[in-house]
Image (cartoon, rainbow, N blue to C red; front, side, top):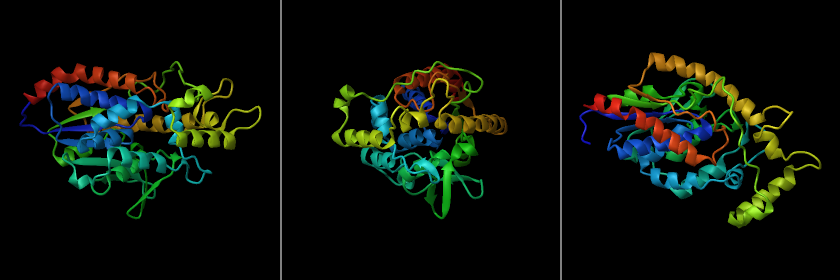
Length: 311
């Protein structure tokens, strides 16, 4: 489709629910609608950056294969300092798998939104390493350590702009397609389908290095008669309440929900896509198939309105 109007995507934050952004992009691709600007916050920055760099297909293939053993292997848990997870393993893997071009060299203009931890101001990252920009934008406080960049300590952009419509407008988009991953989350329960960590019999598909990390991790964190450290951090326990991750992440989501409502009223997109993702937990990155399918379904419903705007 040859368009006279410039189209921008604003992909919001939402942890594991962010894989639905891939489905949104698949819907637009199938409809023949090109993207002129890509903006993202937190997990949305990873998908938007992959779109801008032409890496969406490798990212799609990778996330569909994610299992709990992979997720645990990426978690370089540290003695708590400014966060539980250092984040170096996941960034190293992204550099190896998706490459790490400079943002200014990308085919599609790209912005990742982060938050300056000292000033509380919104930061638009528009140059330098793509993976470093994504790492800054996904730095959920309390979970990931802050990312040092240009003399600033940067954390999750969702603290200030969970659905980054404004960068799209600023770059010149005539039509902004925004994706809000958290519109149906607050106040709703969900059925937990958390998969237990892999048993010995499940490790054949895991690389030797990952097996070693997993064994060392369990040996280090397990205690006789107690839950493993991993499960205490990331899984709800019957009779014990929510996990540490859920407490931190859900508290941030409560704040983000209020901020999102206010910002979308002040800076409304032309198309607002709201996938129904309440059934997917914040850490269930292994449920990419479901999230992608729901993202595509939600965008497909908006295509008639989008075509009207383009015409």
